[in-house]
Length: 427
Ligand SMILES: Nc1nc2c(ncn2[C@@H]2O[C@H](COP(=O)(O)OP(=O)(O)O)[C@@H](O)[C@H]2O)c(=O)[nH]1
Ligand SMILES: [Mg+2]
Image (tube, rainbow, N blue to C red; front, top):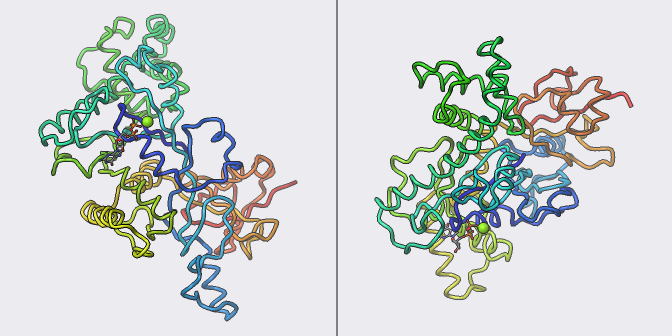
């Protein structure tokens, strides 16, 4: 799972990236992170509590475990995550983030990082456009002064959102136009179905499915009364088709950043082709740093934090933190984790499941409790999950056993959020 951060310069992409990926990660588990400096791991809290809670409840009920003591640093968690962590049964799971610099006018014509930029975008499962909700920068990212009126900020926001859409549209139109006339003539005997297949083929590599192309083609047709033969379509018609396809393939979620200095009500009437969330990336970064320095206890996503040791703080530090505390409560959090959570679990519809080797103790071969948490599409079938664990487990799949009900499940069993599954396979 890979989420790309994109946007014009100076909006706070790198700040968002640093804040979200601040947690120390054993990068040995993620080989490609060491190669690409702009790729990092953000830890997102699973929506369903870690199944180690069930283990604790069972053991406590059987009198084999004392209730959680107030000084337990793990606050009751019993699992041993290979990556991420779990405190108070709040299990953190990895989500890859990419800081994609290079959105400049003309990227679709190869300017700036042009094609490399677009290839980066195409490799992501979802895009978050970080925008400057305060309107403090122009389209090239040049500072325009901190105190912008709501009207000016709204105009800039509109331009900014349109700008990325236009670059993506132009890029897709370019991919479609390549060999268009010849291509569509070749499929003319197959009618519309052939045409949709042809478009799909032209765009493989962008994560298009024939279904998403078919749907966007319907929407495109509705917008045009008389289309005539595809080989006669003007560049403007192909551009319109590209725009419909882009909307289907690249919903763009928006992190309306610098919300701490944005004029009141600036997002009223702003619409996005995806989630729109106010964000304060630099507040998130400051809070996470303060938390790793053990000055505060802050759980990303929450709208408040606790001071750990006020006496250790200088007056400016205390003032700054109090100021941030106020911001958090008026905005309901910094928006950084909440946006990732919403995109990953709601928009991409992913769930967290726990493969184990021992269906009774929920351990792996070494006796580790619930070491792995997999982030997978909702409803993934047991056998597909097996493939994600190891190709041998997929190839040799015999049956699964649901860790909670102990029921045997078949290859096509659909997994739900928080499931624990033992996989039996031929070795
Ligand atoms: N007021 C405010 N400034 C921010 C916020 N996030 C980032 N910035 C500032 O915006 C500037 C550009 O940030 P950067 O992350 O380098 O932007 P990028 O070019 O999009 O990667 C820096 O001075 C940041 O400190 C925010 O939430 N609020
Ligand atoms: Mg940057």
